Every structure is written in structure tokens, then in C-alpha cells.
Image: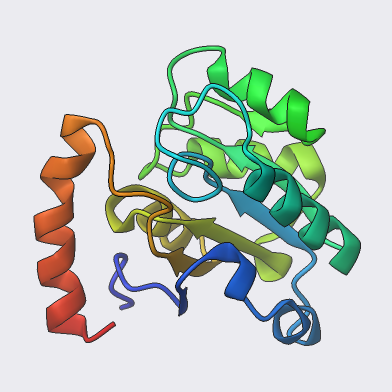
Length: 163
């Protein structure tokens, strides 16, 4: 059984993901976390890097969906600004939001990747849904307290699993 916290691939940031490798493997859909993956934690709008990464993924041929645990309209507003669909209240590490996002964009688990900065939410949800998971280092160090609390156990898992 696969460790649900172990990603299939690690990268320092979204811009360093080898998209041609993913396309060669048949991936055509990407589900993306926003906070600390594409922008600073709890940003109220996309930053230039967010737009750049969405453009890069779209130009490579990926269909995208933002998948956020945010319990507000913030993520929907951000997704509208990025011109991509969004599933908020995603309930990660549960799979309901991931599956809803896949239905929304017509994806199947065999051709979808999940990209995020947290093992206990993004990677666990993607793995539990049977997706190819890509862990990226957090965009910035400033985070809300409940995310900060998860970083030490996450660090332990990364040391044990050597990634």
C-alpha cells in the first residue's frame, strides 16, 4: 500500500516541474492548490507568479482546476481572476473536492496530477483519489497558525521517507 503522504514527484516550485515529462506520461489535467503553492498564504488575489504558472500549464496543454480548502468566496474570486474553474470547501485530505474538480473538467485519475505544498492535505487527497501527486515547497514562510502546526510533523515524515 502506498504511503498517502508520499508524493510521486517533488519540486522546489511549480515553475520547476518538467511538464514535458508529465505530458509524455499521458497527464493532461492538473488540480492545483493556491495558498503557498501559487501565491503567499491567504493572498486575496493572484500574484504575477500565479498568472505565469497558470499560463505555462495552459500553454503546455493542461486543463486546470483550483482545489482549495478555503471556506470563503476568496478562492472562487481568485480562480475567476486566473480564468480557471474552482472547487472550494474541498475537504482535503478527503477526496470529495478532488473528485468534484475532476468531474468539473472532465478528468480521469489516469490523466490527472495534483500539485500542492502540504502533505497532510494536497498530497494525501491526491494519493487517496489515485492521482499522480506533486509536492512543491511552500511559496513563502508566512502561514496561518494551524498550517504552521502541521509543518513539524510534515518535516518528520519527509526525513523518514527521504524526500
